[in-house]
Image (cartoon, rainbow, N blue to C red):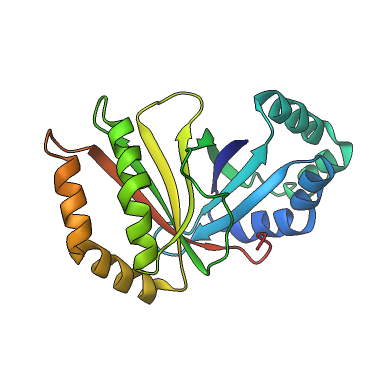
Length: 217
């Protein structure tokens, strides 16, 4: 399965209109054209002009075929033209193609709040980072009430990144769970053992998000 992570950055004040278009039109067209939808999110903390979503396809060839079919649909072209008659919604778009790691659960969103984290591994250390997640970190996350939603590495481009998503019942639960996880002696031991030859992660990024009302659940 191929996953596509897309982030839309909107012009000021346009995010509600973009969400309305997805809810009333775009998601329906995606479904008609066989495009899988894992979820749609807006930031719970931070930027208020961003929509993040993840689509799924059988392969890159499947993605190209379905995306071309969607883009050529005259009904979609009509909706886009009508909704943007007063100006474009977006300033720019970023996207990345992802494959689940062997240890990832089948990605599914079931909680109220999600956190997307991107770890940029030190050169040559991505296999070690994946091993730590598979053998230790995931189990300890679950122990402390953190839901493992999905783990991915990039299918095209950078090969030293691990992208993963966690789930929580709420922001308060996140703070409590992360505090307990960080203090767990089993985690401290696993981290120390995995980093005897140096740190595994060069840089990390995190976004805390909440599913939109139209996001699949």
